[in-house]
Amino acid sequence: FVKHFLHIVGQVPLQGNPLGTAMEVSKTKYPQVLYNADYNASKLGMIKSLFLAVGTNCILSGDIDHARQCAGCANYFKMFIEDVFNTSLSAEIIGGFGLDKDIELLSGDEKTLVRYFQKHIPCSSCLDEKYKEVKS
Image (tube, rainbow, N blue to C red):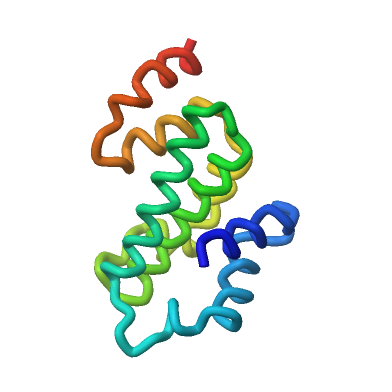
């Protein structure tokens, strides 16, 4: 599912809403992931965590383009989980499903990207040196 989702995101131009397109295609191809009777916020949260883990590894290996895609996907799933499960309707969702943040992550500078991962992974010490590097 994750590979398929990332592949679609990489194929759609930013102006074409790559995350929304990937979600729509994935709903059809993988309904068991998104609409299974057993699906819940924690299972979708694992998908979000996988995007964060892969993205962190991409940053550390210098693959910034794939890290951007992973960050956008992780943020999109965060919003999707909050929206579907009403876990906390954040201002991001009320303001349009966080599309501004997704665009910032998909096209913003490297400092913003590294900072996003630092804030969203449990142990960000592996990114401290990278953040110092991109901050200067």
